[in-house]
Length: 427
Image 1: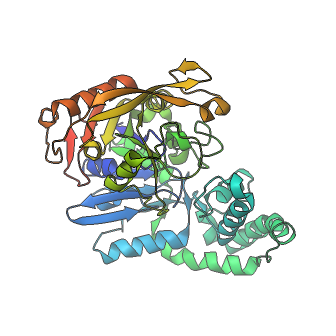
Image 2: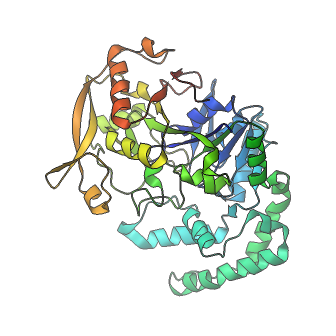
Image 3: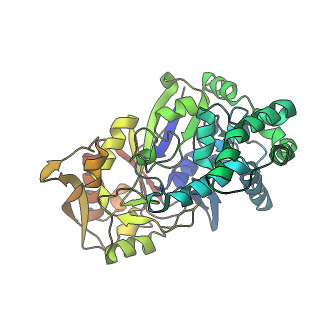
C-alpha cells in the first residue's frame, strides 16, 4: 500500500506544487485532503507556468487521477473557472474526481468572511476573504452544504434556510448588511450541478480500492504545518488540518495505510498574513529574498514576509507529522550571500529554548538565536547531483538536515520541473 503524504513543513508556500509534480509521473492518484482556494501551487513545466488553487498538482501529469477529497471546501465557480483555464491550454481534466462529501463554499460564506475580517480591524487574522473559515464553521455547526446536496433540491433548500436563519440575523443586525435570499442562493448552487456531475464520486471507496490494488496514492496538503488549526500558531492559522493526520480524515483512509510522510522545506522561511514570525527580516536581506525568490502568494497575490531558515520550526514539523523525508526547495535563491544565518534556537525572557514553545505568548516573544554558515556564489541551477553543488552549499544542506531531524531526499535548485536533485527515492 504505497501511500505518501506530502505537506508543507513551515507556514505554506514552500513549493509543494513542484514536489507533487515531480512525483506525479510515478503515482496513480494525487489527492487534496484539506483547505480550499486559499491555497495555491505554482508548477513550471518547460516554458509553461501553471498556478493551481483548488486542483491537485497531479492534474498536470498524464495518467494520474487527481482527487478533491472530502476534507476540502470547494468554491464551484473557482473550480469550474480553473478547469476551463486548463482545458483552454490543452490540459486533460476529465479524470478529476470530487468527493460528494466535500463542503461547498457558498456566496454567503464569502460575504461573512469579508465583513467579519473588516470588522476585526487591527485584530484581523489575515484571511484570504474567500469564505474558507465560515464554510468550515458551517461544517462543524452541521449547517454546511455538501457537493451531494446539489442533486436534491429539497434537501439543498432546507440546508440553505437553516444556514441563513442565523447568518441573516448577524448580517442585518450586527453588520448592517442586507439579508440574503434563500431562493437566490439555491438557484445559484443548482446552476453548478450539471457541470460538476461528471466529476462527483465516492472518493473514499475509490482511494481505498486503489490502495488495495497496490496503486500509488499521493496525499497533497495545502498551506503548511504552522497554519494547522490545532498545531499551528493559533489563532493565525487556517481552518483545517494540513498536518499528516489530516490526510486520514480528509481523504478517508486509515493511518496504517500511510507508508511515507514528506515535508517540504524552503531553504529560508516565508509566511503570508498576520501572526508571529521569529526570523522575519525587515532589511535589505529580507527584500532580496522576496525579490529573488519571487515571494508573492499564488492565490492571494500578497507579498510574503521573508526570513532566515528556522530549524526550531523544522524540528517541530518533523515531530507532529512523523516526517520520514524532507524536500528542500529554493536553495538557489540563497546564492550570493557570503554568510547565511540559520535560527537554531530561541531566546525567550533570557532563556535559550530549542523546541517550539507551546505557549503562544512565549512564541510571540521569541527572538532567534542564529548560527552563521558560509555561503556560496556559484550558480547551482544546473546541478544534477548532490556532488555538483558547491562545498558550502552541500554543507548548508547537511546542516539543515541534522538540525531538522529527517533526511533531505530532494533539493530544488530552480523553478523548473527538471531543476531538482534527487538524493533518495520517495517511492
